[in-house]
Amino acid sequence: MRTQTAQVPHLGGITLSYRATQYDASKPTLVLLHSFMSSSSLYKAQFESQSVTSTANLIAIDLLGHGGTRINSGVEQFTYWDSALMALQLLDQLKIDKFFALGTSQGGWVVTRLALLAPSRVNRPY
Image (cartoon, rainbow, N blue to C red; front, side):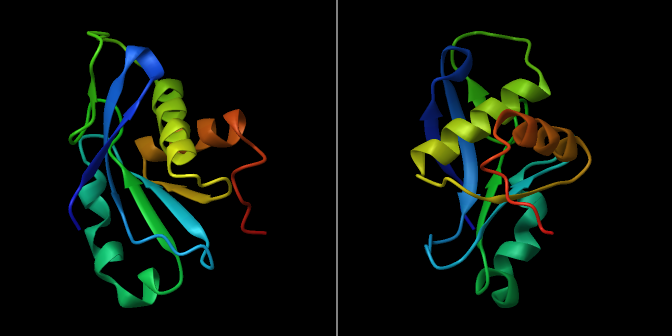
């Protein structure tokens, strides 16, 4: 799955790199956030799995400092909160209101912040 880019306004402007399956409104959406020193390519197997993609929309986001995601304003310091806000801005652009979120290692910290920033948007599996 090729990466795509989007421009989001956080931190004065970010070119955000992500991978996504073709959106189908009848399926739930799963946002995938990778571990430290990795990228959205960590989830290649899930994107290639027919059993996964037939049941859910997938969006894997390159977190700040990883993959193809770049801050355009010259800001050099950022936090997990910034990665979470950036992800929410992408989801706003894609018009995805509700989603499940999965994070591996560092991505788990960002998922926690997504849930704190937008609790009504993050679906709970129970």
